Image 1 (cartoon, rainbow, N blue to C red):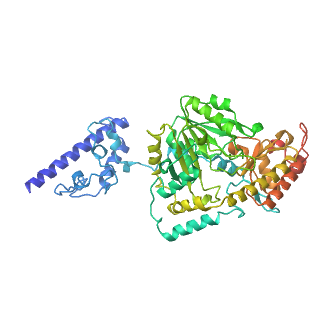
Image 2 (cartoon, rainbow, N blue to C red; image 1 turned 180 degrees about the horizontal axis):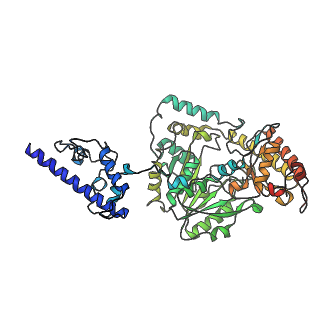
Image 3 (cartoon, rainbow, N blue to C red; image 1 turned 30 degrees about the horizontal axis):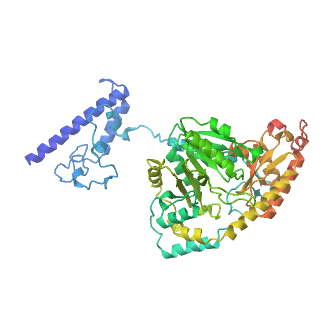
Length: 540
């Protein structure tokens, strides 16, 4: 009994000293003197102490007599397995992480937070800096379609929207088979099931760029693949080179990480090739990577072998790795060839992003991948392990679809893809020929992917200050929505998708022609449409 009392007295003395030190440091942090305790400090310490369960009127339950619990009521360290995480409390099992600091320098950090006088819950840096430009711009337009005309959305990049495209039968059957086998209902390895990674390696490898399963990381769609690639190569304060115009997800990811975005020019007069001199001028010691998108969203361009080699020459000269966004691989029109970027270099390390999303018409299945091309083990020291670590944040993509990947990549016939390409090209020709005949518009014929960019010669439409006003009014009058170029950092253009049914494409082009006819004027003249709307150009 005497031993128990002595132990209890020692614990109480330890607690008293601990709180005395805490109070002293709180006063220092709050700028209070011995005779000038702040009300907040007093409430903070008092409310925390009284909010804990009490035993014998003590601020902490005393369990000194328990062989497994320490004086604070927590399990003793030597009574649990020495794992990375304490099984009861989910905290690291290291002396530094849970023990009070020996010095007083940061003791105020240990002040319980229950004494805050008001709620002040803030979002994180990442949340504050995550922004999708497309969503921001489109939501800001407040579009109101013409109720007398059915809406034709040429803005949505989902090829399943209108039902004229669907996944291949072989892919659907593979998923059904995988579900029935009940072998893929649990968690999979974070980097992906081995059989699926082997299938992707076999499917994407070229003689010039061989791959094995260890070079493949499966992801939740190509956007997740891009997120992992940007996250593993870029730190806050570094910079990332992006195409302009370019898909907005690159900037959304980079800005959320505190990475600076630098946009290199694409040249519309040269079928959207990269301005290599401008690209090179943006590179400095803090440049972490170059993003190359081929085939392109939003441009629909497909780069020649020679141009890709020129891009790689710049990357090699400045020793900058490349992130290759190749989600539209092989979706190219006759007369053009898709060259995987990594197949054209043995010196530049490349992280290539692909997936089932577009080519197999199943964006909702969320199956993408990263293939690591690294002939000289430049990524070996940190990047490979970094990608593995980052993949563990979500424990990998859909296991069921992973189970179906080998069959999908093996059994879907080439005729399926050719049918898609034929439809896309037909719509591209309809859109290009139709809009090329409209005064004031200058479309650029795509070579692949699912999109086409068109320039608005804004001087011929003086009613509208920019393409935002133009596309918004087009919706109001004709119920046709084209995505404004500002969504891709490229004003005075708009993007259309080529995945709508052929009859809708023809109807949309006809409505655009009618709209432009009402507003088109020769340069320097005032549009008669002002009188019809009763608005001045400055009000557009």
